[in-house]
Amino acid sequence: MFFERPDSGDLAVLVHIDFHIQSESYGPEEFVELAISAGADPVAVVSGSRQRPDARYFVGTGKLAEIKDIVDREEAEIVLFDHALTPSQERNLESYLQCRVIDRTGLILDIFARRARTHEGKLQVELAQLQHTSTRLIRGWTHLERQKGGIGMRGPGETQLETDRRLLRERIKSIQKRLAKVDAQRDQNRRSRSRSEMPVVSLVGYTNAGKSTLFNHVTGADVFAADQLFATLDPTLRRLDIEQVGTIILADTVGFIRQLPHRLIKAFQATLKESSEADLLLHVVDAADSYRDDNIAHVGVVLKEIGADEVPTLTVFNKIDALPTGEPRIDRDVDGNPYRVWLSARDGQGLDLLKQAVAELLAVDVFNEKLYLPSNCGRLRAMLFEHGAVKNERFDERGQSVLEVKLPKKDYLQILARAGMSEDQIEAA
Image (tube, rainbow, N blue to C red; front, side, top):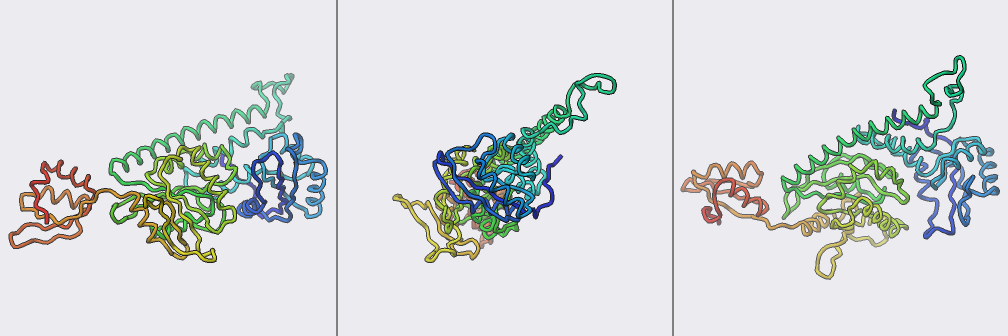
């Protein structure tokens, strides 16, 4: 029961209202992008300002008449509100405008439904859609009423509306159980990565900041990347070798947005754990966006909500190719530690600086030596090869194996202990 919207391409009227009670105001540009990402064809944007929303129609009677005139003149099929509407407001607006009305939450859910590719992603979106829809069921099945009694009217004792709600509740419980299993599997995978001592670095940031493009350039992956909102929903993980660190796991995750529906954050909790349990976050920012600082703040709000605000973070200012004087560089704090990198993922400028900064922040004590192993150290030699720590091997005139090894010092000590040996027993160059 995966709720799909009707085929897109609908002529849409967009409504964006500024309220005096809001602590911040922003234009309708992002909402226009959202509508286009959903496949709508915006024909008009209606703007205005009010002290507070109207309880019945959200907008005032004058603005409502203006919207109605535009809908009739443009023969629009849908009206999109850049706000969260109550179920009653949505029904009242549809009755007055005689067309479909969808709020910001419904629009974002529609985009997520289009972009989800994996089984898990579809389950997460369906859960959020069902929870959103459950508050918007209307009494549209009165001909199936079963509470009136009488001949031919006796039934299970519930209206069709109640039946729909019960079926929705059962479906929601079923999806939650299946997602719990997915969550448990992800936890197991994370524990496995933890046991292997592989650091996890997670890409986070505002939607359309260039996370997937950066991910593809750095890892050589082929994740879908496009100049549109929410191009990535399903998390992708790849291994990446970093100098002085070794192998890390890089995770590409869903982008954030202002007024991100709480239901989506809850539904994508398993996915977002990749960020909250990471060793380092790469906060990718569109450096050329006029709302750059606001976007950074909104990402911070979501990170706090998912419990990732305490994770060490490196800010990545992307798209410097769109700046008049953008040059790749690393910004450092008073202690000399990198806290921001400027680069262009599309052109590949500054990617080496990013790896350098990640290496510094994840730096561990690396054992990088030549070892001389006699023939009776075959077990240790095999374990070093198994760990992937041997860069080169040759044999000297005494028949000893000369290994060039590189691995974290703690891993080297663990391997020695498992082999029943100590550092004093091994001859190093």
